Image (cartoon, rainbow, N blue to C red; front, top):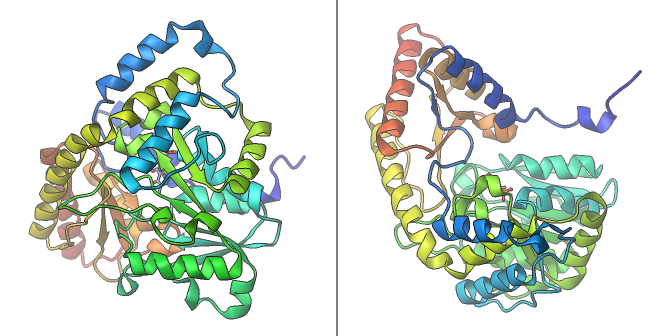
Length: 396
Ligand SMILES: Cc1ncc(COP(=O)(O)O)c(C=O)c1O
């Protein structure tokens, strides 16, 4: 009997999920593991979220089905945040939709807006939920390489005209995972113009908009003229408020696009636990105050990591945003071979660039998940691996 659908075979391996099992085995063997793989920082969630959840679970109304409407209070808090933070006024009922983490909405979106065979443009390297959603919806996937020479930007205008004609959906993510690149406003303007002209849906994935440093402020796509016509913007409580496990996100956009995604979700889930939405409303109301210490501590870790990388001869510029460092390897070193070596010999979990697609070859990603001293220790272990490889004249 054939158990799996053909579409599953078209999905690449999901490295982060596979590494979790490897980590468990290393810990069981007593290895001093430093895990800089998933973007899952060790900060506790805000006390405001914990308190709100504690209170909400005692209210029997919170135990009912949330449905897609969910908690009006959460929708209103998300809409207020969009207005306060970006100057974007949205209707909480028709232009906001709660998500079970932004990954859920991102991966379901193609089922809502793409027909089989339509072209879906994805950044390569890129967050794996994009290809997951596109392949499951039987889209024709166009992976656009993100390269340093082009500031890791997806330039729709570089696609051949006949290919561009077939594009239905594009995923963009700035501040970017994994490259930590940010998008200049003129880039966003020309991209929105192409989407408007060609009738392309623009999925703007913005979970790192609060994880910014050195005075940089990340925009919303809706600050760009015309974006309200074509874009959906995905937000998350995971990174801004250190609430990865709570599974809470939201998407904002024009009512027709929101209602298409709502229809898909109506058939596959019944909404986010209302008590979690209550906690989400509590943190969104105080977003600016709550993200300040997250930024400060991540900036310290970033600086420690950049110093340590410099000391081992892997210089990178300080990123303006995200909790990641995208580190180029010495020429000829494969990212999977290198990260496996660091894991097996040094107990450090890093993500190979190719965990995000072939376009990530030649890089590895550091996530600033632990305190500065441990990040620096991990980088020293990376340095030992490089030395060992150099001494052996080896290329992995
Ligand atoms: C670019 C990007 N989008 C979306 C997500 C998913 O976040 P959530 O926890 O809200 O599902 C992540 C998580 O790492 C991410 O890096």
